[in-house]
Length: 226
Image (cartoon, rainbow, N blue to C red; front, side):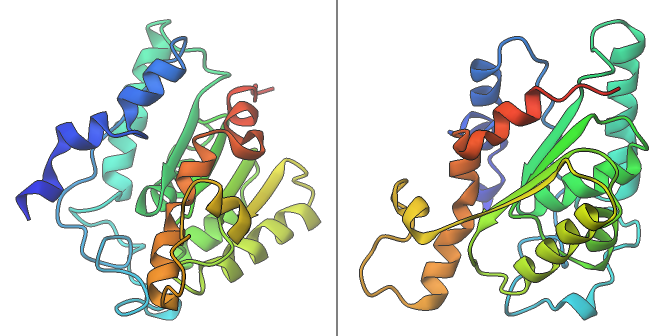
């Protein structure tokens, strides 16, 4: 529907880039808009009904979603700002939620060392993002609800972060928000909710992260590249 493509609404939403720029006035806030019609495993059509981890084919470059070609163009804009002296190359961060969380993970691969650290929130987990996440050398903090509408998400996130820690990345972190923590932000508090509805509402874990729960945003913005 037309209203779902209202970019002005998206930009000015509570957790949109306008809000970010007000909270972090010393930062440049770059908010590229996802290419329309992302109806595959990394888009709105993904989830319980239409996607499984093994069915993933979204590692291919396409003309939609957070594909590698598009992300490379985004990274080049940032590199130009570094070259112009506008951005500190030691303090470049990336975060995003849901499909944008997967885009965050993919950007860490496409950027090839551009980003200092990342904070993916409830990221879509497919084979490609799993493989990138579990081999990431940079600081990373993934946050999501204890369970949400993509049931298998947590297994692959947990496995990836555990592998990073085993292989020496001690600045790899994972937060799974509990029902009680979500309830503090009025998420999934309706009594007798059906599980599917509860898991769908639990997906709003970005509300907690972008309110700096667990100090995730403070951690992100205090990372400095060696």
